Amino acid sequence: MSEQQKLSDTKIAEFDAIYKNRKQPMCKNCNTSEHVIPCIRGKPSRELSIYATMNKDHVALCGCTQPYIAWCKKCENYIEDPED
Ligand SMILES: [Zn+2]
Image 1 (tube, protein in one colour):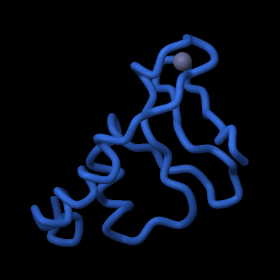
Image 2 (cartoon, protein in one colour; image 1 turned 90 degrees about the vertical axis):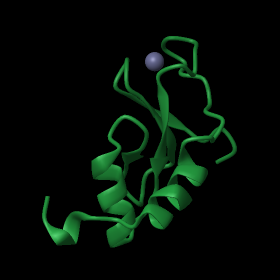
Image 3 (cartoon, helix red, strand yellow; image 1 turned 180 degrees about the horizontal axis):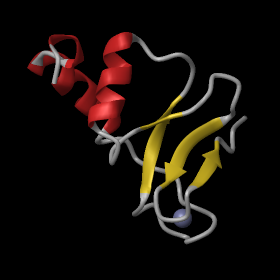
Image 4 (cartoon, helix red, strand yellow; image 1 turned 60 degrees about the horizontal axis):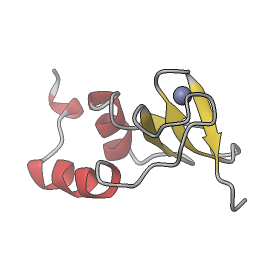
């Protein structure tokens, strides 16, 4: 791993606090939130995109124009924000 691809432990802990403990919506397909991970909307910062690459099981990146808030790993299905 190159120097550029590293994050400080502080930064990792900060992102973990935001994304790992977030309550996830249900996937309409499998009716559980068990396989659902948060979606990062918009253009991620360099650090956030490194974090997403390191933690593909915990967060997914999605485009800035999409109304998605989460991703079901099992169904490979994006979940939209019902509030939108
Ligand atoms: Zn699902």
